[in-house]
Amino acid sequence: MKAIIINIGDELLIGQVTNFNASWMAEQLNTIGIEVLRINVISDTEDEIISSLKQSVTLADLVILTGGLGPTNDDITKKTLCRFFKTSLIFDTATYKDIVDLFVRRGLPVTEINKKQAEIPACCIPVRNLQGTAPGLWFENKGKIVIATPGVPFEMKAMMTDPILSLLKEKMTGDVIVHKTVLTQGIGESFLADKIALWENSLHQSVRLAYLPSPGIVRLRLTARGSDSKSLEKIIDNEILKLYSIIGENIYGYDTETLELIVGKLLEQKNKTLATAESCTGGYIAHCITKVPGSSSYYKGSVIAYSNKIKEGILGVKSETLGRHGAVSEETVKEMAVNVKEKFHADFSIAVSGVAGPDGGTPEKPVGTVWIAAASPCEVVAQKFSFGTNRSVNIERAAVNALNMLRKIILKYS
Image 1 (cartoon, rainbow, N blue to C red):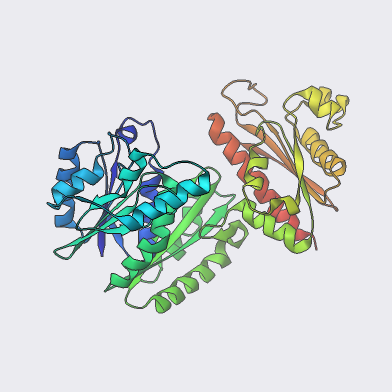
Image 2 (cartoon, rainbow, N blue to C red):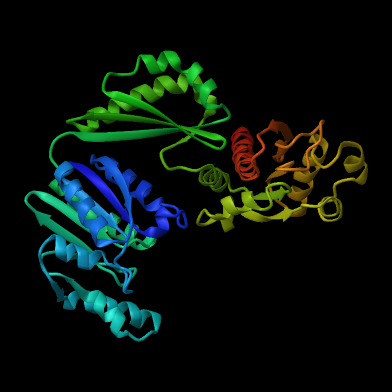
């Protein structure tokens, strides 16, 4: 099955909203073996929607639209689909019941504009939306499937997860696609490519490799296509075993795992706790850690010591250390890590101090200079990093490297 995704919305075309929906939908479709041929972003006009639909159904078996199903006058997708399929709107009582139930749960009355959300094209099958008021719309015509989903990300994701993806999977025939992503940290993309060149050149003929770099991390996605998913999975697993013998020290996880999730699991397994001290990252590391559900069982808290006064007064960094070595130094981050661990009565800690940019650098410590320390009950280690000049990227890289240093020091502790 081949698919085209159509994202509807002027807000996407003018850059007011980032198109996260498309990447998520494409990833989900690919995991069940559906190949995405194109992703189109179009404006909120009938002519654009009709034109894109006409072209897409000639090229693909499946067309998924997202956006424009809201209750206001600028949401025209539903009416345009009626024009495309030569049908009219009818009132669907089951959809209206879902809308009423949603508003009752929220303690709000159902208005006339909300009631109109229960009007759907007569020739479609409604897809329940338990997160909002706009139902999904499923059309089948001349062997083609057209599905419309809301543009609100959490509504679209819930609807795609259940039931759209499972229904599409039932309709699929032919080859399957199997993906496995290897997550690496601590080595740049070009250096990684050099290191694994022989392995890459000798990959099984059914396997393709893609490099997916992001700040501080390079993901290696292995993709295999064939008739039997189990045999493909075995082929990929064998290739990953070979890869691990080459870069095992750089591999920290697989697929959708995050460093903060892996660190959290390690702390839970060992029944240990964590505290953090941040300067240039400004609380970003704490944010990453607390995104993980259940992190309160192992994460004690953080001191965001942005100024030297806080480093000295709250964290207890010695004035002589700051005076002699400066805030961005091995000596300072080591004291930050040790002191925050003691202050919070934690088993492990990480500390970060650096020059995030775009200004504030010196010839000795240019923008992008970051020192990171990690402390365990047995030791404290520190490492200097030289990142670039982009502030937000530097913060992200610092957080990734700090979490990976923490992961390694936890693994060393038994």
